[in-house]
Image (cartoon, rainbow, N blue to C red; front, top):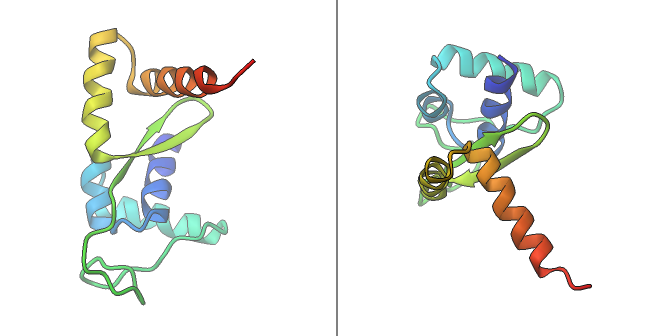
Length: 116
């Protein structure tokens, strides 16, 4: 349940509407709304949405980017949907989880770019 809560909070903070979040995390809209209320009470800065799913007070001409959280034991990272599929494919090829592949790629990229 804590992982689902974390996923909902990450997606909601990114400005994604509750209805879409419910679809992405395979949960009911009621659960998503419950977690959003709980997170706001805990001090999380989550925008409010109108009935169309738009962030209130924002003029949107295009949909909000749709990051997908990759949750590991202690860290969180959100990636756009277009990268999630690539991470999943690479994870399957390597026999690892998407979180492990993301960590490997980031570590290699960051550590590889650091000079002596």
